[in-house]
Length: 366
Image (cartoon, rainbow, N blue to C red; front, top):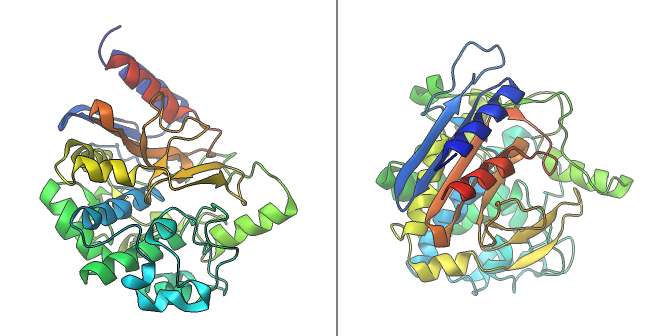
């Protein structure tokens, strides 16, 4: 078996086992080399997955926002070593005046959830959420703990973009990345695009993983994923127009697999930023074990880096961002390769080998 035949075989096996739709796209040296999609994009099995199906990508959104920050770093508009207050003075409240941009971007700022209850309606006002976090004190000394900022990362990094550029994060990403590249992703999905949307639904055993399984960790996890309500509960807000319209910058983007792979391809090919910027954004800034899920974490400037679970396949320098339920978007810079795996069926993070199987096969076929 040669070339990408093994990838296609693994992809077919994944779709058959899930009895649901999925898409897997790969670029190499700026050209698309794989565009696989199969199965159905709705729980009733009536709508086929297509190459331009827009899926909820959950925390894959963070990789898009991080790429927006990378663009501003490359242009000299943001210095990752500068204090956040250089761009956002109000952020210095409650003892945060010395927090560096790189700490904010690497989930080390101690703001993993809002301390007061927040509704989904509240979460739609990105400026208000950013102001709420700016006034909040860190939960622990900044830089001492790496903790996944599941939703708050988006409001923090999005406000950093707005302060440095002047445009709202969704507007900036659309104008500076999505449209110039023809990359099919949206942070705030217009109604005209709704007919292209697919759905994500939970496997019967899906849960937000908790490897620690202590009362303290479970309580912490519930604050991270339940304020505002997102992955916890029996409903699936990400499959509704309300979610698509809001475009939460921590987890609310809609994208095709081809669109995300195209963005990461432009990132590593030099089309978006310089090689030195790629090296800077993918340099390790923080590492630890998430206090709510027990997952090993390694972050650069907003991107996940390779971790002990081998999330980014058999390439040590791989980086990007995963999304809840098994989706994965990223790149292998030295190989000039980018990839995006977007499944409809959500499986438990850290106990799901679908993306790993595909990346292993991909690496063998290069």
